[in-house]
Image (cartoon, rainbow, N blue to C red):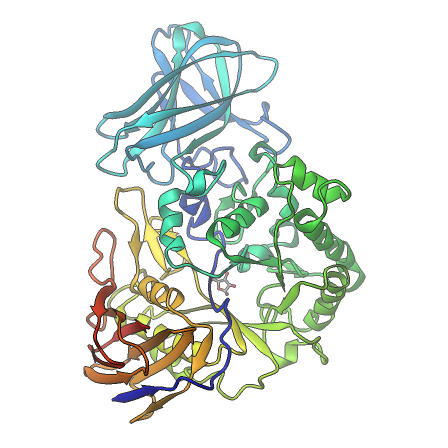
Length: 605
Ligand code: AHR
């Protein structure tokens, strides 16, 4: 195949095109990218009971509803010590099926109530081996009149496996025949950009390498709520974590909301992403509100926006943000009204609900670009305001995705779109349900080439879902996975496609003349100034020799991802990853050998 990249003409390409979508599911946040490693740490929600807690020594432990830590953290852990106690006793938290223990400095905190003066010992211990990786004493003075917070940090050695627990013990002889209560236990490894209550550095760094341009959050279904009252509520996700009650959420487990609104915004700022905030627009899985009944929720969204954008001295919610530690307003230019309102009975009322939210937001914040939660003509207002973006989602099998290659070629050029969620799901393939495989990832690359060719109107796109703890999967595949073991972070083949595409894109799409039509080979070329990027995908079982000419260039690099059709990366076994080769002295001519099911990017200048 011959491809000749032209150096003139072509459309502008959206600078935001490749981003990410995050919602709390598959323990992607709690137990995932959020740094806190102990599960059920404040008994948030109602459904976990004593999950993750164990007694250490001869004590009885139980959830004590009579001793709340705060209004939000409504119970604590009682440790009842027998009369004859002589040793150190206490409790352990086993994390999310194990605590990942590295050679690193950990921060830990807890609340304590009950009369006790003396040593508390915090340890990181192998649950089965009993090996102690960290052993730290602190001296505390706690009383029966109130919960007292304690915080400390300590160095740990690395555990060879993921079967570890965090232990808190105290001198049982001092409490014999009595009890102590503990609440909101927390353990943090190093965090991304060293933030308080931040992201896990290792899991965040993986996604930072993709250089995503936007973050769509907080869902997804998890924004909507199983019921109206269990929708994602911004104002219960802010301020000190001890004031956040958490919620029974959409994906089968309670959320702590320790990864809350400010933490999402900080995440965006630290990775240079534009935040795309989804706001609840009246639809939950258990009911829909519209008309006058919806007005308080419209006002609630305005409050949320004032919290994010309001002046820190003259506005009520801006002051609250400052009190929570952020004086400067956040930057927010994109808000999505709802999620998938064409589904679950949302269509009838969406046009009216959309208009209510649109008017309120646009009147107060005209700089904000509004995203419509769907693109179903029967679900949209008869007259869409100018400059809104329509959000399209799909999860399909590989061939179906390739069939969508030209989805945007003939769309009106005055209507912007976002593909806010997409991914290849093929649950019948031999590779199983969890991991992406090369043919599927290649189908995504073909589709992304179609997106990039149309990135004058396709403003944003995000593969979804983002990441999963492999012991808690309710949806697969995800872009990357992990568990508690060292080196368990596993990027999927689709991860490498996202990374190659997002880190190699120009600001203008260039015309390409070719010796053949699209399929099974697909391509797109872009440039910024004198830097050119040619993306290729071979969606077929026969290799292809591709001669690419890019006038005026001479050197650069070729990134290539290829592998057997149904092979992917599995935990602790990354077999397929991007290979980078230098290209030089090419005089504008490059010969690329595309293996079957290969994705490549040529970046030259
Ligand atoms: O990404 C998983 C789910 O798929 C999202 O929560 C929802 O928006 C979509 O239906």
